[in-house]
Amino acid sequence: MSAVRLRFREATSLPVDASPLLPRALAGRSAAELAALPLRVGNRVVPLGELAEIEPGDADTLVIEASFKGLDRLGRGMAGGRLEIYGDVGAYLGQEMRDGRIELFGSAGPFAAAGMAGGILHVTARAGDHLGGALPGDSHGMTGGAVLVGGDAGKRVGDRMRRGLIAVAGRLGDFPASRLIGGTIIGLEGCGREPGHAMRRGTLLLGRAPSRLPVTFADNGTHTFPWLSLLARHLATLTPAIALPGDRATRWTGCASTGGKGEILVMA
Amino acid sequence: MILNGVAIEDTFAEAFPMRATRLVVTAPDLRWARTAAAAMTGFATSVIACGCEAGIERELTADETPDGRPGVAVLLFGMSDKDVAKQIQARVGQCVLTCTGTACFSGLDGDSRFPLGNALRYFGDGFQLSKRIGRRRYWRIPVMDGEFLIEDTGGITGGVGGGNFLILATSGDAARRAAEAAVEAMRLLPNIVLPFPGGIVRSGSKVGSKYKGLIASTNDAFCPTLRGQSGRSALPPEVESVLEIVIDGLAEADVAAATAAGVRAACALGREAGIVAISAGNYGGQLGPYHFHLRKVLA
Image (cartoon, rainbow over all chains, first blue to last red; front, side, top):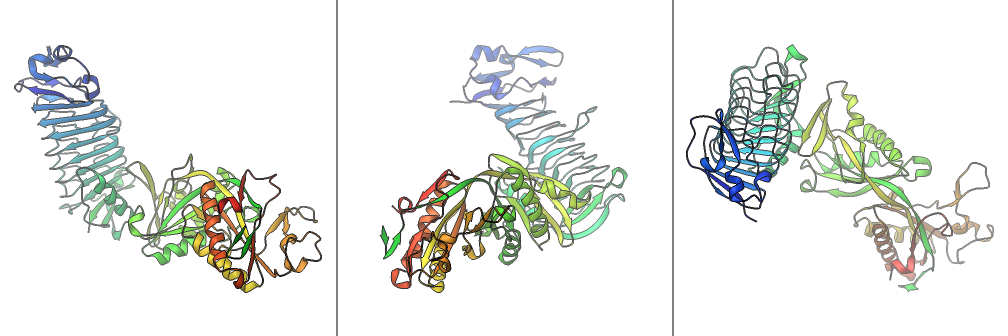
C-alpha cells in the first residue's frame, strides 16, 4: 500500500479550492483520473494535473508537498485517512473534518478546524485566526476532535466552539475563547487581550497569566483540580505529546455578561 | 477425592447469572481510597436483603488508575441493570462523593452503560461542569474540599453470582483458619469478590422457610447443633463448625478458578489441622445454570 502523492509545481496567485483533495477520495485512482480532477482556482476550473505532479497510490494516505498559502479548504469534511501536508496552507484547513488525521508541517491560515467534529488536526507551526471557530453565520464552531498546534495561534481561537480540544504550545492571540460554548482550549504560553470575551461555558487553560482579565470574570482562588491530571495524562498520549505543568490553577469564572459558567484556569 | 487428607465431596455449587460493574475509586493515598471503597461495599453481602453484592476486587497502584493516584477496584453485582444502576447511584452518592479526596471512574466497558456521574451531577446544583477527555466524559462536581471528579457513565456486563464452597471442620477455630487461608488465596485473583464479611459466611442458607414470606432460612443440613434434630444433616460426627465462602465473578471461569484456589488453600492446612471435608451448596441443579463441580474444578 502506497500513499497518493501530489507535489505542487508553483504557488498560484489566486486561491485554490483544494477541498476535493481527500485521502479516501483519491486512493486507488489512476494517474489519469487524478490529473483530470477539477479544482477551482479563482473563478476558473483547472485540472489537478496542471497544478501538481501526481503519484497515484492505494493507501488512504495523501501526501501534499510544496503546499502554499493559496491552498484553501484542504481536508474539508475529511471522514478518515491521513493527510500529510508539507508547506503552508490557506484558510479552512480541516473545516468540518469528522475523522482521520491531518498533519500540517507548516502554518495554517484562518478558520482552520472551523466546525470540526472529530479526528485530529496537527499544525507544527502557526495557526491563523478563528482556529476551531465558527464561520460567519454559523451557530457554533468546533464540536469535537482535537487540534494540536506547535506554535502560536491567531485571534479568536475557539470562537463559539462547543466541544473538543484545542491545545496550543505557543501563545493564543487576542480574544481567545470568545463566545465559547464548551470544550477546552489550552494556551501554554498565555494569550493576548480579552480572553473569554462573552464565553458561556467551557475552559480556557493558560500556562501564563494574561496581563489583564476582563472585569466580567471572578477570582475563585488557586486550587488543585483532579481533572487536570486526567487531561495531562490524555495530552501525554497524543502525538505530539503536550505537557501540562501541573494540576494547580487559579480559577476565574465568567463571562458575567453571558451567565458566568465558563472558566479561565491560569496554571499556578 | 482426597486432598491432603481432606475429603472433597462429590457435589457442586450452583450459581446464577447476574449483572456486574467495576468501579475504580481513587484518592490522594490508598487509605482514603480503601475507606471509600469499604463504605460503598458495606452492607452488600446478598441481593436478598442488600439489593446488591459487592466487594473490593483489589488495590491499584497509581499507574493503574485513570488519574494517576492510588485506587481500589470495586465489583458490584445485581440482578438487573436497573438494580445495579440504583445501587451504584446510592452507594457512590453516599460513600464516595462524601469521602475526602476521592474520584470515581468506570472500570469496565461492558455491554451496556448506566448513568454514573450523570446521575450524581445534580448535587452540583448547577455549578457542575462536564468535561470530555479523549473518548470519555467526566463530571466535575464542586464539593467543600475541591472538586469531585466522576465519570459520566459506567459499564455493565454479565456476571456469575453465588459460587460457593463449604469448609467442614472439627472446631470453629479450625474452620476459621482454613477459611482465612482460602480467602487470602482467592483475593489474589482478578474479576471476583467475596461479598460476605471477611469473605466468609457462617449463616449459609437454604431456599424457603417454614415461615410464610421468608425466602431463605438457615441451612439446617450443615448446622452442627442440629445434626440429630434436623433429620437431613449432611455432617459427619466429628464436624463442629462449617463456614462458607461465596464467590461472585465476572465470568464462569473466574468463579471456577477462585473456587479451586480457595479449596486448595483450605485443604493445604490438612486433616491434622481439623479440616474434615469440603462441600458446596446447591439447589439440586434446578435453579442456577452454572454448576461448579468441586472435583472438576480441582482436576
